[in-house]
Every structure is written in structure tokens, then in C-alpha cells.
Length: 466
Ligand SMILES: Nc1ncnc2c1ncn2[C@@H]1O[C@H](COP(=O)(O)OP(=O)(O)OP(=O)(O)O)[C@@H](O)[C@H]1O
Ligand SMILES: [Mg+2]
Image (tube, rainbow, N blue to C red; front, side):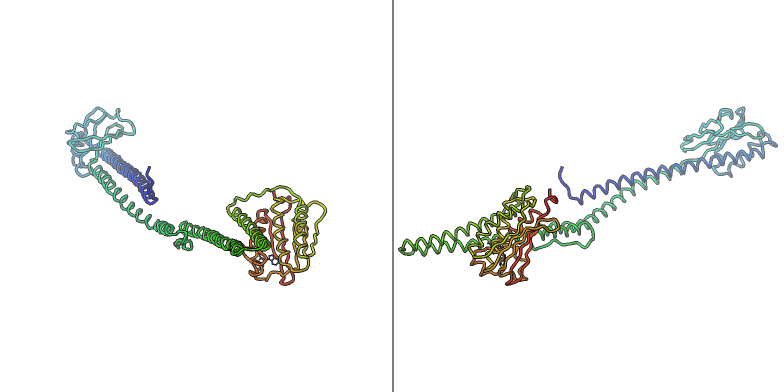
């Protein structure tokens, strides 16, 4: 089936329900009105029987049948309903017989054939619809049948008039209500169309644009706000990716340019073997750095894509710290720095990927070595509130207070010129932070300029993680 707009479906449903309700209302009210009218007619008939009975009670004893007939004739023209009544006694002798009923051939029952509750019937007499009531009464100890009638013509006319009014009014009301509903749903859904138009105009170049927020305090306002928040997240993710690509290309260009210049210079004229060797060594050193850089970029790209899988298992953190320290000691040795470790002999259980954690520690130790001209590097493994914690302290140049929060950002270097000399791209700590977070741990930096820095890795206790 073809999908229709919400507005169309709303209007159809609304009209259908309304039509049903109106028809039900019309039907029920017509039946109720009819019931009331017929009930009133029956009531009138009963009153008239009672009137005739009273009249007989007062008059019948003193009068002969002939006289009674005359009395009836006189009275009948005065009472309501005219002379539409007839009376007969137990032997079927008429005390009074109205001309229209007689001419219409309306029979009367003998008193003994009439049940106590009376007999009601509808008849057409000489083209007029009548409702009749026959009742048995006792007057001065003798049974009689009294039969009275009312014309139903006016009542039925009124009833059919009412039916016609309903037949005309119901569609009219339905039409007006449907038109009103159609108009109202257009008004209510107007913001949706605006949101659709605005959303359509947002492309990758215009991610900063936002959807209009209708001040309606309803679902549509919440929808717009939620979509805008989502757009905000997409925009910042998109910006991060664009910046990452730009920074990565920029970082890659420098070593590749260096390799190229070195090679071009070496090739410009005939060189001695020594000079070639030197050039090749430069090329080699630069390509090693480039490989490391590409390795780091790949790690972060995989982390972003959620494709980097880490092995999570129970491990001895003391063992991991010891292994990283062995390499750290070598790095420190090259720079003539003292290297101390304070690691307990007993195992420190944790859950994680040993090689990733080793990599994290080496990133931090490598920084400590790089940014410490002289002095000492200390690696400690301890327990903080039941959580294993590794602290790497140095006595190096430190990090200015303003940069402390940003050192974990990608490509961020506190001192651009110096870092470039030591070959850092500013990716180490962002990888360290990612590894810490994947382990549900934290890494933070404390530092005092010219006095040294401490990087603190805290992992959740072995029992805290599955
Ligand atoms: N121990 C430290 N002492 C002083 N400054 C530090 C220390 N560790 C990090 N920094 C500062 O934080 C910056 C970011 O460190 P990060 O490890 O992310 O990058 P990098 O060392 O410059 O390059 P990479 O690690 O990618 O080779 C460094 O450039 C440096 O300015
Ligand atoms: Mg580093």
C-alpha cells in the first residue's frame, strides 16, 4: 500500500471515528425521542380511558342506554381526541360508537376478552394512522370495554422531521469537523516540514547549521533539540577526523621531505663512500621515525573505527611493569639518567592486555626520558584504594600548568620546537589515554615546571571488572 502522509492518515482516522460517533449519537437519540413520544401517547390514552370511566361512573346509574349515548355524544366533541372512542358492555351492546372508528371498521372486544393490562394496537383508519387502547373497566359492578384512540400522524411527522434533521446535520457537522481537523493537523505538522527542509539543507560542508526549534514545549521541540544535539556530536566527530587527517598528512610530509632532500643532495654529485653511508644512515633514521609515526596513526585510526581489539585477561601487573622497566632502563642509560623501580615482589592481579599496557608504560617512560635532561626516573607500582596504580616520575623540564590538560590531545606538543628535535609527533599520550580508557582506567599528569612530572595510571582492581 502506498504510504500516505501522517496528516492524511490523521484526518482519515479522525473523520472515521467522528462519523461513527455521530451516527451512533443520531441513532440512539432518534430511538430515545421515539420512545418518549410513544410513551406520552400511551399515557394520554390511559388518561382518556380513566376520563370516560369516571364519566360513566357518575352518569350511568340514572340514565337509560339512549340517554347515555346522547350524553357521550355531547361530551365527546369537547374532550381531547374528539370522539375517537367507543364503549360496549358485556353483551356487546354499544353504549357509544364513534363514527370514524365505526366507519373504519375498528372492532371492539367484549370485556371478558380484554386482559387486565389492556390491549394496544396501531391501525390505519380512513387513511389516518391511529394508536388504540382497549381496557376493561367495572362501573357499578358491571364490566365494560372502553376503547380510545389518538391520531399518530403529527407524532410520526415530528419523528421523521427529526430524522431528516439528523440526516442533513450529521454530514454537515462531519464536513466542518473534518475541514477543521485537516487545517489543525496542517498547523500542528508545519514544524515537521520545516525540520525536514532544514535537515535536507545540511550537508558535510554545513554541519554547523542547526534545525529550527519550535517553541512549542512538545515532542516536536524535543525532537529538534535532540537532532541538534546529535548534529553537534556529528559535527565535532567530523571536525576531529578532518583535523586528524590534516595533522597526520602534515606530520608525514616532514620526514618524507627530509628523506627526499637527503637523497637528492647525496645524488647531486659523486660522493665518497663515507658520505653515502652518512646519507643512508640519515635516510634510515628518518624512515624508522616515519614507521613509528605511521604505526601510531594506524593505532589511533583503528581505535576510532572501533576495530582495535585488545586481549583482556588476568595478568600480573608487577610483571608487566618489570618488563617495561627493563626497556626503560636501557633508554635512560643512553641519556645517562638514573632509573629506579619500586615494584612489589608479590603479583599484582589486574585484567587487561599485557602488550597494550606495556606499550602505555613505554610511551610514558619514553616521554620521561625525552623530557629529562638530567636526573632520575622512578617507576612505582602501588595500590590506591584497592586499585593498582603505576606512577612514572621524572626530574625533567616539566609541563606548563596551562598545557597540562592538553598533553593527552592528539598532535599536542607543549613545546613545539623541542619536540620536533626529539622527533615526537604528539601522539604518544593520546594512545596511552586510549589504552587506559579501554581498560576502564584513568591516566593523569601532574607536573611542576623545571622540577619534573609524574604520570599516574590507575586501573580498576582485578575483582571490579569481569
Ligand atoms: N614527562 C614529560 N615531561 C615534560 N613534558 C612532557 C612529558 N610527557 C609529555 N610531555 C609533553 O606532552 C607532549 C605530548 O606528549 P606525547 O607523548 O603525546 O607526544 P610526543 O612525546 O611529543 O610525541 P610522540 O610521543 O608521538 O613521539 C609532549 O610533546 C611534551 O611537550
Ligand atoms: Mg611521547
